[in-house]
Length: 179
Image (cartoon, rainbow, N blue to C red):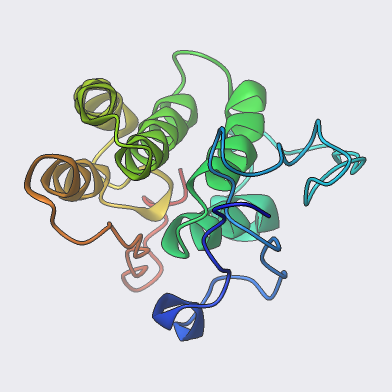
């Protein structure tokens, strides 16, 4: 699998949001088989299932969203981007969920660009993510989006550790984080 980062590392034993298996390798463009277009890809031939609109359905009940967070936290930046992008297409441009998803997608892409040595592109993506985090709300889709973007910026510009997405706990029946 070329220069694929092994799927096992210290991060792999952290608690996850789903029990779905992780892909066989982390896709790095130009270094590993394209996951969906190459017959050797880890997701080749897999059909997608209908996805919910996270503007209408609580994110807590969306396994695909939670799996996207797992992929992000385990360093599967390209795969995370793809999973969340599919949800973003359903949520739509300009919606609260759409902005929150776009902020996360751009942070995942920025992390991938760091791996690929493309720091200028990574910085640009983090800048774009900031605007979407502001539009996505203080706790968009259960995350402190502004903190995610700030930590992504520190990773891109200062070499801080990669961001770990931590869902904000629901405070005593508070449903304000359901978007």
